[in-house]
Length: 122
Figure 1 (cartoon, rainbow, N blue to C red):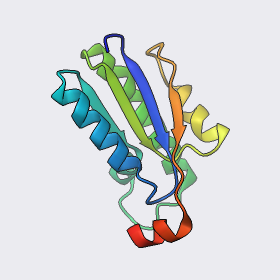
Figure 2 (cartoon, one colour):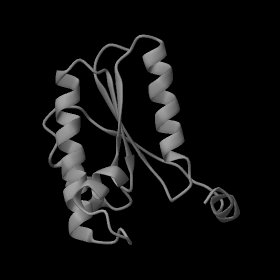
Figure 3 (cartoon, helix red, strand yellow):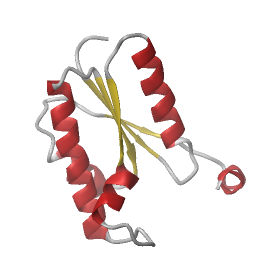
Figure 4 (tube, rainbow, N blue to C red):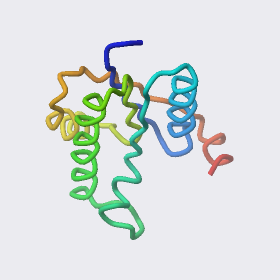
C-alpha cells in the first residue's frame, strides 16, 4: 500500500464496524503502514455527550468533523484512513464527502448483522 486510501465502514449497532476497523488498522500498522480510525460516534460525543444520540444537526457536524480529520491524516503520511459510523443515506454520505479536500475517493462498505446476533452483542 502506498497511495493514500479512504475506507468508510457503515452498519447497524453491533454489526462489527469498530472491530473490523480496529483489526484492519492494527494489521496494517503491524506491517509498517500508517493507518488511522475515525469513530463517528466519538465525534458526536465530542460535540454532545448526552443520550440519546439523536440530534441530526450534531450528526451532521460530526460527519463534517470526521471529514476534517480525514483531510489531515494523508498529509501526515498515513496510507489508510478508516471512518466508521452511520452513513445510511445519501444525505449522510454527502455531509461527509462534501467536506473532503483530499481528492481521495471513499470506498463505502456496509456491514450487516442478524437481529438476534446484534441483540446478543449489545
